[in-house]
Length: 410
Image (cartoon, rainbow, N blue to C red; front, side, top):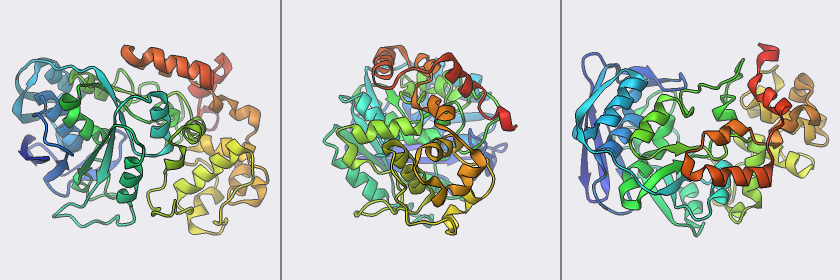
């Protein structure tokens, strides 16, 4: 793979050319199949600023081209020896040219989507600047996801009153299958990478929860997901970001969506929380799977009946009429155990299959302690104090629930 960055004032353009052994189809870090649609994308920053360090540009490019690169990648600017070693150690890829000194920074930025998880991180770090990624159309690729209201999410982010940078990019359209999306999940940090020098950033906080870090959200994993290649501190992506002087951290990586939703709604940004990708200026759509899951959790937190117009016979409720496993199943169990009258809702069949209780799901109210130990040293104490004081740490028995998740039905 050969990578080229050019800049026109505030807009950075990435172009890449495949080598003979590269591929048009590949897999991202979580195993999802992705096919290459085009060989360029743009990232527009709010201000021109200084040129980023070569390691930052290289890492940003890798979050976009990694699925299709096989044995080597050549950048148009020198990178540090540490970053080249991270490429080799993590992917067996030869990267160069080498010749730059390492970089570093001091401040922590928050990758802010406006969803409950990133709002929870913002509540933990009230003084940290936030970087919001907004999808925009690609000039050569049709938008097949016109229902994704990225404009609404950007407008809500701008209302936070916090130090905010909105980055607009069409990089998600480099995919043709299964739909527009990040080539690698870490591409959400492209804006922070390209602005790290301008903002003196030395870390970026992402709003991933225990499901993504330890239970692998979206799948029912049989066994402990300790060596998660996407998010483990010892994984290749963590090594790459650290070598670029911008380690990522998961401040809510030890807690569930129920905890982050509670944290978000109780924060000063609670009125601006928006997890729905389809909703307009009037609010969430109320019927997409994510809205239904979050309504289940909010009802569970508030110990009230479900407020959902969607019924069990609705196409979007079909998944919960089938036997498990379910995506984010731990949260379905949590909600079904706590919502009054669950047997009269679209989740009735799921509750019948799962038979959860408050006692069997209490572990999801607390923080998994090893997640705190993964936080880089400059910010670990603050996360530890917050989780200890506001959430509570898991008991040994509750930790065991994390480490045996899925084994009972494997």
